[in-house]
Length: 388
Image 1 (tube, helix red, strand yellow):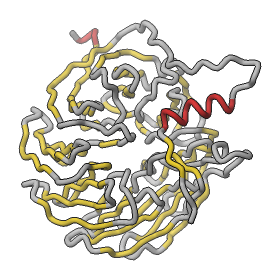
Image 2: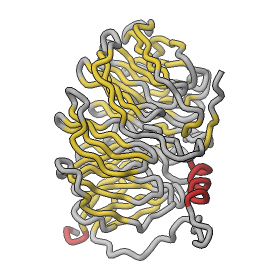
Image 3: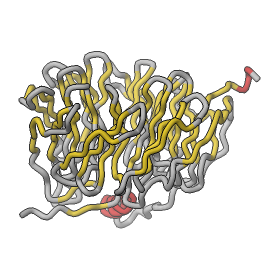
């Protein structure tokens, strides 16, 4: 049986820098110090709530989820919360009897989390009561997703499983071949209507029928290169992003690719390396690279619009477009940074939690929800300084 090595991304980043550096060139491994900025906006905190113990040291991404006026969040110990997203007031809290490794997914009356013990747990969205539990192939590191008919979950061993939305019974399974060495993480599958889009550690993206798991199309977006297993890693850990009829996907040590939603045909490609989810807005696709540079690409042509390298090696979160800005958080100091989507300049900064920021943020209307590693869920709104 093939043994797969598990690498924390922070450790892996240091290894890659060492491997790719020329022997005659000094390698700067320290996070880049924050530079003074010309602040033109202010991050206003609307409310803050404690979500238990927060993240696990084993690189969990416990992303909150919003449905209407409710935001759902979980901590590593299995405390699941429903809060009023406008005030932060608790609606319900459910204590599960085991640690949670992935969440939160939600939809059609269910709140979904995954566990280290390879379980998917479904809770009632209104009351928090447990509806069902189902076993899958291995630990779950990506939030389960549902379209109201099936719940789709991607396990760490590369197996994609569809469970019945009402009962949790297995409907179908899709197995992807896995390389010897992978990053610790999985892309969250995307369900749109009756189609499931999923990326895998072998550098491939597939579209499947949600009803029965039949393959619609398959596309390789990265080809392993190099001699060592480290150099040949091409994981697709970033969730597929659909904008209109174009599916955007990025791999580690591979490419950022725009694909036809219907056929999987590549429309444009750019060399890229990222394990973070993508963002989109104002006709651009935003990417946080593996080295924590932030870049924007024209969504239609793929042309690079701008690149910001002021936050290198600060372990940035996925970029989130909201209001008239692009937001990224860093794990080094726990700062939230706002970028101008037109030129990539940092226009505002605020420290959220010294424990750091890791999970993708959630934006609804003009409010940004940020979940810190220590378990603080904070809602922010932006005010331009010239409006005060």
